[in-house]
Image 1 (cartoon, rainbow, N blue to C red):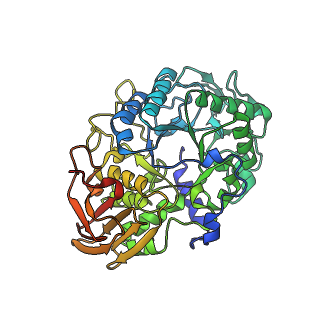
Image 2 (cartoon, rainbow, N blue to C red):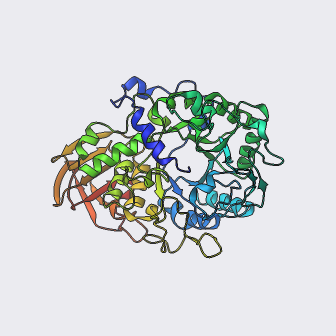
Image 3 (cartoon, rainbow, N blue to C red):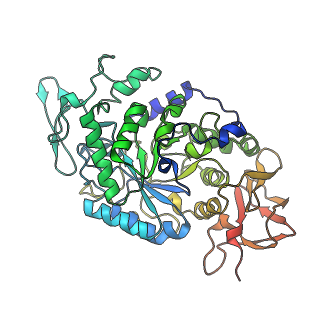
Length: 496
């Protein structure tokens, strides 16, 4: 979201939460008040193909995501957005209508993507921008001008013809310019404007009905999940009412950047855990792997595991330098740690290269997005980074699938920077953050046989992507390379 990154970090730092491990009873208790169980029924890794074209996502589902075991794709907002000079990424978070027409493609392209991905076993989750519309600050001195959307819609300040007018928005009157000034003030957070974006009155029956219609349209095309952007800036009861009016039957995860606000939104589905990425990044960056695992960094005292939506970085946080990103040498290890440990629904980030934090996706002289799909190898070429294709990441998606529901067991450490453990009796993994190889002998609980090291990539019909690792009488003997990972699981046994 536009210029929100510094605010996001400050609010996360200012709003502390308990970090101790939740009690067993709290961890086993379903989120209190969850209205629809379907809103939290989701498993398997999600990948955010940030700013990809719909046609490229369809191809990626067929060629890469389905075979690798990804469960779902989070796509960029599909609703028509404000065309901003320079085409920054954040223009996608300024809707002007709910027509499915953006730089990513047309409604027909979107529908084709949903269908092809479903056939490949991959769900589509939409980044739903429903808290607000576009930038409200369209008046400069006495000159009033209008904006235009990606489908050609012309709009003005608090005026979206055929959709919303002035009275459909909050005009909070609590601050000098109606922008949020104090993030500790819940009324401001929910009633005032987020960096000048026209804040919808989601308590209004008309607004609720209109948004519900948009969500119903998405569902009719086969969309099975929602990321609710800026959910924290809506009243929790308003969001719940909208989901109920839409009769939404899919997965829901809500963007909540202030930890104390999260429990209020549990009746509507899962909630994002931003501190997870901060804590994981700090531990991996500093080499405190044993402290991370022993402290069970994936646990929260206030949110049950099944309600947490976790990630190392996202499109906002990767632009402020606090979390690890694809630019950091230890980033892949952090993603592997996320996928190798229990707790929460995991999301993998897939980025493009940037220097300017506002820079939009790779595009040509006509401002058309350059295709990202490329060859199904390491990276996608040009400026597309495609972390989701990295061998370690794809291999660990399979590890996550094979060990779902299994706790960390048999923890073994050699200093702060080398740690190994099992996930029940279904997987074993070793992390080495040091500059020297680590020879580890460890009880795994796995059947005696040879396993593919999935840290080198997922196995295929041709065999292991890397070396095979033998387990004898439940014991593994492995050499974990410097700054490396070795991982095996029951679904990666050597077949020949």
